[in-house]
Image (cartoon, rainbow, N blue to C red; front, side, top):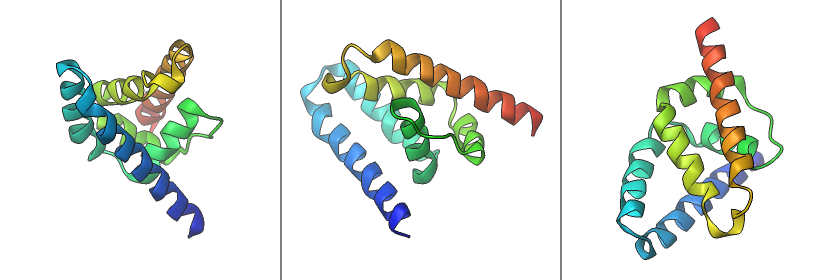
Length: 115
């Protein structure tokens, strides 16, 4: 239960940080905020955190989250990961994260096709 609670808190922090930084960016960022609001509702918090941990950390992908990810759609997945990767603290490592993002997507699509 504590692990789930920490995941929910981590997701809340990510969402809060996005909302805190969105107003200071350009119109393009407003479009990203809209995508964030649209896409975030398509995936469970557990799976969103799992995918974030896989792309930005050393997490292990939960295969059941692949279904949520494919349902979310490539555009949502790409934009949400790029949005997080573009944050100031991650500058210089964007290419690494974008490759991991694409690897996760490809893996999930292949799993979804065989299921």
